[in-house]
Structures are given as C-alpha cells and as structure tokens.
Image: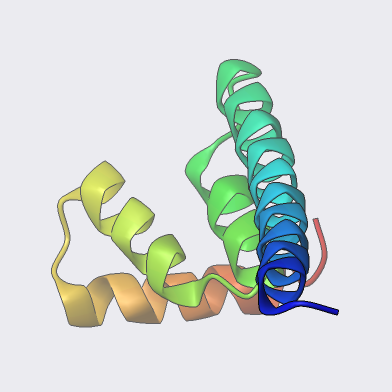
Amino acid sequence: MTWAFVIALILLVLVALSNFALQKRVRQLEQEVTDLRSGQDISQRVSYLVNNGREVEAIAVYRKATGLGLVESKSAVEVIARNNPQI
C-alpha cells in the first residue's frame, strides 16, 4: 500500500464519521424544533435537555425564558429534573 492510499482511506473514514455525527445532530435538532412548535412548556423542555445530558443548556434555556439569575435557574432546573425524571 502506498502512503497516498493510506491517507485517502483515513480521510474517507473521517468523512464517514463526520457525516454520522452530523446526521445524529440534525435528528436531535429536528426533534427540538418539533417539540417547540407543539407548544411544549419550559419544564418539559428542561426535562428533555437534562435527560439527554445537556444540563448546562437546560439552565441557559430556563434563564432565557424566565429572566432569572444563574443560581436561581440552576436550582429550578434541578427541581424540574427531580419532579419529571423521564420525559
């Protein structure tokens, strides 16, 4: 095998992995758009984000929606996550 072939093969694998990751992210974003269009309330949105390992984003969404500070938003997100374990 030549070096050009090895490099081309590595690039092909990287492109395939990037494509897979992008498709996964597109599906997540499509689901979020669908949820937002369906009138999902803030606690459901926060629970969805927390359940998907996106606690920081959940706090940011809550802060933006309510206008509360960081500490208050973090506490509220924790309460919402406890009360709605899996949505």
